[in-house]
Image (tube, rainbow, N blue to C red; front, top):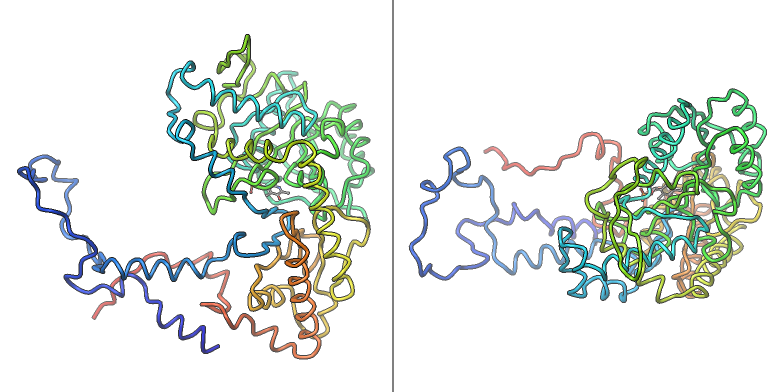
Length: 493
Ligand SMILES: *Cc1c(COP(=O)(O)O)cnc(C)c1O
């Protein structure tokens, strides 16, 4: 407790450290006559003193931000078991390749004959994703998974309107990620939720009832689903949809579970987004760039965003010759540097490496599942793949909730798992260790989770008061989201 409050006292804002006249740097005197800004800029663009600008020394700045950076937690520091997010380690080779001058210094307006290497790289990544999905073409443009969903749903809408149809309904299982219904609505559809079976999988008969109306445009389903459970009837579901002229949108965010093992194309997917920042180890943004390529079936190929990279006679070109395209979904070609990182990862692992990556992810999740199943409750106890969803019902008697367990994990030095998702599991704790972790790190995490389960039984108040070792304790998360204080203002005296 004391450690953290003294930390808090010590770390004042940079504005509060300001002291009049203190300098962080000095510029040499100008050797040329200086321009009078007032003579060169329109008066409306000029401003006087910047109010409250901190005046601090260089060492003040460096120490302040270095201390703040240590409050952060990253996958370079330890296990990051956020379920569904696939927070795997980002190998440094990816960064090296993305920083090569010939790649990093490209300009998107350079003519095609100067960027053959970059086009080859995109073409090669597309080929790799075609191999991984078993689907005929892939667009690399979308900037994230959710953006890929929107892209896929727009292609489905265009394909339907080409047939002269205006179907409105998109079916979405209740275990879906929140981006699925959001993307469907963005693309102009209405969503109907389908309750999962007691095993946590897609309810085919519920889907069949919805299909009878003839208004269903698509089913959006995550495979394996957000419980980490493979959809055993996915092939049948695809056939039922196709028979009714509807499409299968597959959310591929969980591709990490079966890369190199199974092909979504064979399962009947018409559109599938791939989160390069999950499965293929490009960094998760923190608001920064991601990449969500979309693989499509033959039926949707005509609707792909333009331009696409084409190869003919050893030359690569950007082609916009696609009359039915939905157009562009992103400036230029998407987040190119992320495509480079993903290809570096794919090439360094190779086909066998990718397969053992998926197998490692599944093994690690099942190891945690087995070791913790006595301490934490499993609502769905059938076989699962790359992630495992526990809940807090064994802790209910002592009043300890999933949020308390998550906060207490911070004291043990771990990032908490995903909480309260999927929504069909009350008090969910969704753990996805990924294949990056070795047995020592997994054992340390398991030991921490077991210790917390023991604390919840023996001294629940301790768990409910956590965390004790972090710079800030429990925050009012709703207020932080609804009424954020984002600007410092000088105290009025
Ligand atoms: C992460 C995720 C998404 C959204 O992907 P973003 O890249 O975050 O936009 C969609 N569905 C599932 C199942 C996910 O895990």
